[in-house]
Picture 1 (spheres, rainbow, N blue to C red):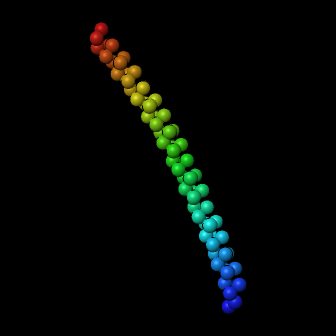
Picture 2 (picture 1 turned 45 degrees about the horizontal axis):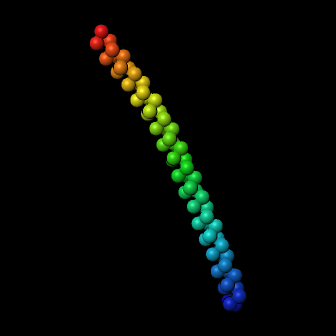
Picture 3 (picture 1 turned 90 degrees about the vertical axis):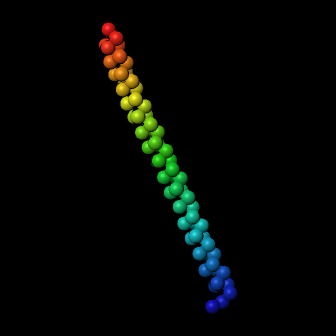
Length: 66
C-alpha cells in the first residue's frame, strides 16, 4: 500500500469518527432537553395536585371549626 493511500484512509476514518461523535453529542443534547421538558411537565402536574389537596384540606379544616 502506498503512503498517500494510507493517509487518505486515515483521514476518512477521522472524518467518520468526528461525524459519529457529533451525532452522539447532538443525540445526547436532545435527550437532555427532552428529559428536562418531561421533568418540568411532571413538576407542573405535581404542583397542581398539591394545590388541590391543600385547598381540600383547608375546606375540611374550616368545616370542622364551624
